[in-house]
Structures are given as structure tokens and as C-alpha cells.
Amino acid sequence: MLKKSGAYFLFAVVGLLLGYFIFGVTSEKENTSIEIVTQVNGKWTCSMHPQIEGTENGKCPLCAMDLVFTSDANGNLPNYQFRMSNDAIALANIQTIKVRNESPNNNTLKLSGVITTNKEKDAVQTTLFDGRIDKLYQNSIGERIRKGQEIGLIYSPELYAAQDKLLTSISYRDTHKKLFNSARNTLGLWKLNDKQIEEIVERGKPIMNFPLFADVTGTITEMIAAEGGYYSQGDPLFKTSDLRTVWGEFDAYESQLSFLKIGQEIDIQLTNMPNEKINAKITYIEPLLNKEKRTVLVRVLIKNQKRTLKPGMFAEAFVNQVNLGKELPIIPKSAVLWTGKRSVVYKKPFSDKSIFEMVEVELGQRLGDFYQIQSGVRAGDVIVNEGAFTVDAAAQLKGKKSMMSNKVFDEKTQHHDHDNMKMELKDVPKRIDISAEYEDEIHLILQDYMNLKEVLVLGDGDEARLSSVSFLKNLEKLEFNSSFESVDINLTQISKSLVSIKAENNIENQRKEFKFLSDSMINLISSFENFHKPIYIQHCDCVDNFNGASWLSFNEKVFNPYFGEAMLNCGRVESVLN
Image (cartoon, rainbow, N blue to C red; front, side):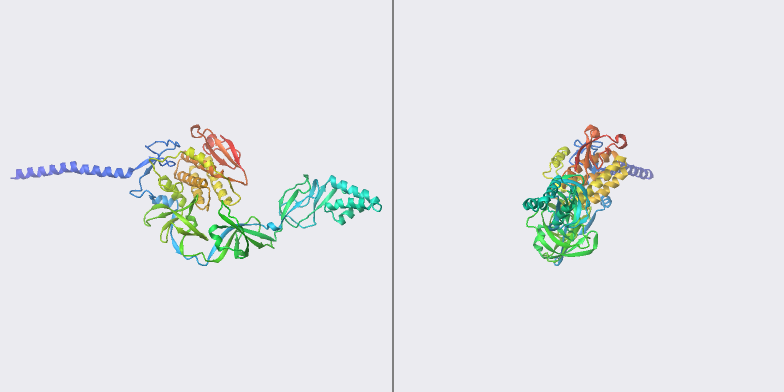
């Protein structure tokens, strides 16, 4: 009996052991496989061309960049939504805000503009006769002159001959009055007064260097002539303006015109006097719409007895107690991205999840630092108000709707050739005058780009990451509403490249991405004209396995950001933007 019991016990133990090895190990292997699959679920792709798929250690066939691994973090999300990791959100300092309704009754309408000279008080000092300017007593901008003041000396052979003729006719002025009066009147035609003519007669000989007298009163705003130059009758010497009054010229959008009228009171605030407001009235509303800016010029006349207002100063005008209509949702202007004619924001459809989607919105009135929203979002929606450019770059990398494309990206069928796109973007139909509206924005972008280029020249990868972060933050602050779609596309490409540089630790990979960043910058800057100083487009044929690469520089001397110390001065100046 004991033997049979022992045998049963032995069989039971053996059965348990076999079951463990057969089923337990298999189950463990299955769990491990599932875990491994979960960890590696994703694909190797190009950060610049997300439609490309490859294998580990592969290269992109379009740009030759190393492929990077992208995990499939979107799960079963719809194709117009995407997820960002919490670390990425924290690193980019992405912030959100809840949309709220606000009654716009009795709100303040804000206009942006600049102080200019009073064109009705502008004047030009000209020469009254041909001659060489030997001396100019007032020869710099900002000097004040008054009518009748002596402003310089001129040598004029014609005037010398006319004086000599007058002095010759004195001997027979009693017998031949007509001849004498004719000689005298000749000098009068050159605006010499009776006192000056009598001084010539009393002197008894012609004046070699004749004094010039001002015909106008005001402050010199532009110098044209210079000592030693020869000028013909009627040539301008300098321009003046009476700065006791100035104009404030402001841009009003189409949607704001119905709230503005001539004689309406406005408050003006200047950047250098933030705590002081100047009261004025609208004196003129331009009858024509600027087709490029979609604005109308609104002008006010401002007293400037103390000369504290300088032409060229930026100013803001506030029209108070304006009834702007019904209650509408409002969002911060920092949340809005402009792309051609579209305005978009990024919304979080689930407040407790890191999921985003792009939404096109229709903007209404601007209320200070906010915009009314006619459609697209409503009160209670959560949108990105800081870091929208970074979110847009993430959308592009994941092939989602973005500023670049209003359609969902089809990774299997859609292909973008970087070189072809580069040629298309350079084909800008018309260049934009930088001095008109975008001066501060473009200079800010250029300076950030130059800072990044300098640290790449030095070969400092850590500093390049910091520079790209700073560049991105400033890019997101831009209030850049351009009607040129190519400009917006380039801005999007720039932000996308900066995100890639920020994520890189390897200086060589940063330099590869800088090539694409530079192409977009060159396309962007080439869209503008009238820079205050030359911008050099430089090129090195040795970069990227002798495919070549270009970059921008304020300095004519070449400092190569792609090679650094290894080939510091390799390259040449291709062209100059002025």
C-alpha cells in the first residue's frame, strides 16, 4: 500500500514538473515576446521625410540623413490626431489654455502704426542758380533752420557774370534806365532782394562766393547735397519738416473699418513712453485698401511742441468704447498660426490626455492680445497657447495635418523631394519690403539664425541645442500674418529643422540638419528686400559628399559652419542681398 502511494506521489510530482516546463515556460516566452513587441513597435524613418521607411542604420534616399526610430505612440487614434510624450511637452514648454466667451461691448479697438512727419509741412531747399557748393553751414540731419537764414556759400559763374553786368550798367543808369533795370531784374529773378542788390552796388565788385539763404523753416530730415558738389538750378540740397506737428499713421483691417470715422477720438501710446497716452482725433481714412496687407491707412494729427515724438517711432492707437457686436469665444494671439490665407490653432480634444489636433479658425476682431473667433473653436475647448510651432513640427513628423498641409499625410503614396521644393519656394512672385511691416520680425529671425551658425562654426553641439531652443521660442512669438504662402511654408520648415537640431546630441547630425534650415532661411530672406546691411549667401561645394550646401552670413569673410576648424574658410560668396 505504501509502495503504491509513493508511486502515485512520484507520478504527480513528475506531472507538475512537466506541466511547468511545457506550459509555464511557453507562457513566459509568450509574455516576453509580447513585451518585446510592445517595446519595439514602430518604424525607422527620416525626420525630414516621414514618408520614408527603412531599417536600422539606414539612410534617407532623399536627403542622406540617418534614419531615426519612431515608436508607434498613437495607438488607435484617428488619422487627424496625434500624441506627444510628456517629456517632449515639458521640454518644449508647451502650455494650454481654456477658450472662454467674452462680451465685446464697450471694448477697446487696437491699431498698430508709426509716427511720421507731417507731409503738409515738409519742404525741399533747392539751389536758385547753377554752381559749386563751397560751404554748407547746416549739413546734418536734425539741425533746425529758419527762412532767410544764411545756410552756405556757392560759386556760380552765371551769377558772377550777372553781377558784373549790373556794375557795368551803373555808369549809364541815368541815361539808359532800361538797360540798368534789365541788369537789376536779372538778379531779382534769382530771388536776390533789394538789400542784397544794393550791397553789390555799394561794394563795387562782384561777389565770388555768394551766400545761400534758406527758403524754408524746419528741421533737416534728409541731406542730399555735399560741399564741393556742382548743382544745377532747382536741384535739392536737403529736405526739411516742421516737427511742431507730426502724423500718426496706423493700419486698420477691413473688419475694423466700420468702427472708425473721421473726427473720432483715439488714445496713442508709444513704446518709449509706456505710461503716457496722447489724445488725438482721426483726420484722414485712406479711400483705397492695401491689397497685400489687407489694411487701410488711418491718420491722426499730433501736436509736438516739445519735439518728444520722433518720426519712425512705433506707436499703438486705442479706440475706446467700441461696440464690437455679440459675445464670441476669444483666444490669445500667441495661439494662432498663420499659413497663407488660413489661420489655425492646435486643440486638445481630451483635457486629460496628451493628444492634439489642428483646427482651422476664422478670426474676428483683435481685442488687445486676444482675437475673437467666428468659427473653429468654442468656449470650453482647450488649445495650445504657448509652443504651437513645436506642436506643428511634431504633427509634420508624424504625417498629420499641419501648417504645411491641410490634408492628412499619406505615408505610402505621397513623396516630397527636398531639392524640388527648394526650387519652388525660391520662385516668389514679388518681394516684400522689409521696412514696411516685418522689419523687427525678420531681424529677430536673422539674429537667432546667425547665433546658431556661430556655435556650429565653433563645433559646440550643446550650445547648438540651446540656440535652437531660443530660436524656436522667438519664432513662436512672431505675429507674422503674410499673404505669401511660400513665406509661411519656409517658417514651418525652419521650426521643423530646429526641432530636429534640438533633439540631436551629435554635432555632425546637427550640421546635416542645418543644411535644410539654411535652405529654408535663404528662401525666406530672399522674399524680402531693403535690408539695412548686406546679407551674404555663401556656399561650400565640399559639404555632403560634394553635393554642396549654402548658408547666410553678415560677414563677407567665410566661416564654414559645416566643417568648423577642419575647413574653416572653405567656401565662397554666391550672392548678396541688400
